[in-house]
Figure 1 (cartoon, rainbow, N blue to C red):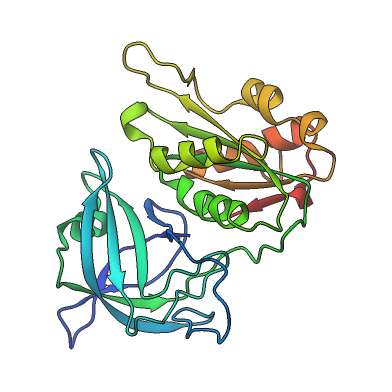
Figure 2: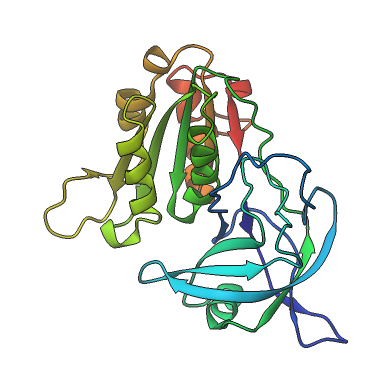
Length: 269
């Protein structure tokens, strides 16, 4: 789930307005600690369809050199976002990657506790059902890791879900890795069910991670259907150039189809 702005301002208000949620560099990830809360079900802030919500900033945390985590307070402490595989009550968290000429990301990086952001949008997530697939492959680039992380942590926190997950995550350098600590903790806690492969296109100095972009050779090695099963599901989220290379277009097949995946096996956030 990504916010693709421009950010616009309502004529009658000085509050910024978030108008859509698609790929574009401002990433959403909910860090749930209570994904399986018991009934009664809490109120959902973004249950689907259009939502008009003004949320105050509760805290701001620098994640790396160009990304911040913004934590917004929901209207009531028992409210939840309403997104699949998330359940932390009372808060909504956004990962925001800043761009030098990005008006939206620059503004959001300027927010501080006590400021408010007005949402005119619907937050949507993949309607995951436990054990729908024996294996899934997640392929992400840059800030595209956020919905993939959301899906990963939601699956692994469910003791009744046995899905095996392989993540391929492409970034420029080690300092650009988002959610590294969280992903490494998940891999350590679930070594038989989750493996993360980081690949660096612009490594600095010696690195223990794979070097290069996400390409056909890497995917054949780490995520070919022969290793994940013929019915595996592939989830992708990243820059347009990466997604186009992976899925292709009407005139040419993408890398995933070239290595054996069908189009109906691929889901783009």
